[in-house]
Length: 79
Image 1 (cartoon, one colour):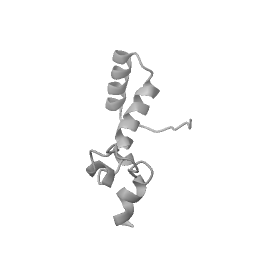
Image 2 (cartoon, rainbow, N blue to C red):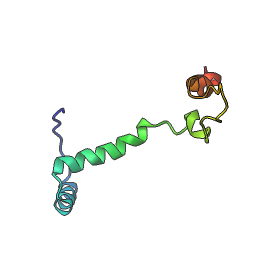
Image 3 (cartoon, rainbow, N blue to C red):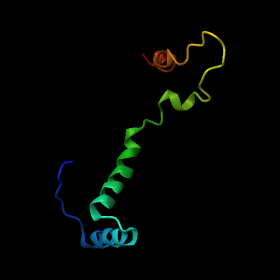
């Protein structure tokens, strides 16, 4: 882990401390959870074709190529 030092308004600090006491979690963990929640929305591209292709899976037919060629099937038109 990397240590980060920053300043926040007193009112936000009080709210964080209140949450830490209420949950029994350390203040650092509360802040890491908040950062994770904020940043996780940027980790996933909601316009990724995979989210438009459901249901996606094997048809049960012999030689079905979805599992082996999923990248080609999903992203070929974008190339």
